[in-house]
Image 1: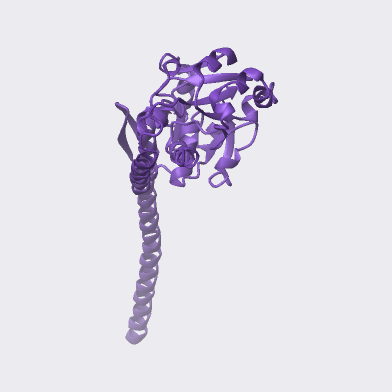
Image 2: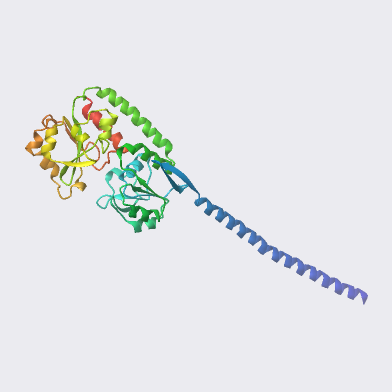
Length: 333
C-alpha cells in the first residue's frame, strides 16, 4: 500500500516537472521572437537614420545642405548641368526635353531619364513623383519656382554664366562622386588649350573672329564673357571686336550693323528648335547680298554648327568640342 502511494506521488511530481519544462520552453520562444523583432527594428532604424544623413557643400560662395549620398538626381532649367552630366557620365533620374524629346546630344545619358518638362517650363508634379535626392535648377528661375522645388528636395540654382563652368562641373562631380573624372577633364582641357594656342600662334592677332546665334530669325551677339566668347577672347586670347565689348549679355543686331563689323571669321549656331517660326532664317541670311558682302562670307570663312546647335557655350562639354573645332577650322590659316 505504501509502495502504491509512493508511486502515485512520484508520477504526479514527474507530471508537474514535465508541464513546468514545457511552459518554460513555450515562454522562451516569444522572448526569442521578440529579440529578433527588436534586432530587426534596430537595423531598420539604423538604415533609416543612414538615409537621413546630410552634408554641407559649397558652391559659388553659398552653402547647401544635401543628402550624404545623392543618387536620385533631377535637372530642371539648367541645360548647363545636362551638359556636365554628359561629360561626367551621370544619368539623371529626370531631365530637360527640347520640343518634347531629349536632344540627340544627350542620348548617352537619357535612355532611362524621365522628362520633367522643357527648359523654362518645369513640371512640378512630375518632379514630386520622382522623389529626388537633389534638384539642379537654373539661376534664371524666378524665386517662386525655386521655392516650389525646395519643398520637394534640396535645390541648387546652377549658374548660366560661362565663366563659372569649372565650378558647375565640380558641383555635379561632388554630388555624384565623380571628382576624379572632373579633374581629369579639366586637366585635359588645359593641355589641349595650351597646344591650340601654340598652333594658332599670332596668325589671328589682327583678325576679327565672332560667334553668332540665330534665334527667332534674328542675329544675336554676346558680350565677352557669355556663350562661346570666353573660349575665343579669354582662353585663346583673341581680340574681341568693339561691338562685342559693348554688347549686352545677349543682344540682337541688325544685318546692316553686323556687316559694318565685317568679321574675318564667323561661327554660326543655328537650331531649328530656336527658330520654329523662321525655319528658313539661315538660308535667307546666306542669300542676302548684305551678308554676302562680309569678308568672312566672301572668303568662305563661315562655319555653321561646328558643335551641336543647342550647346550652351559656357560648359566643359561646349568648350572641349568648340576648341577642337576652332583648331580644325583656323589652325591651318
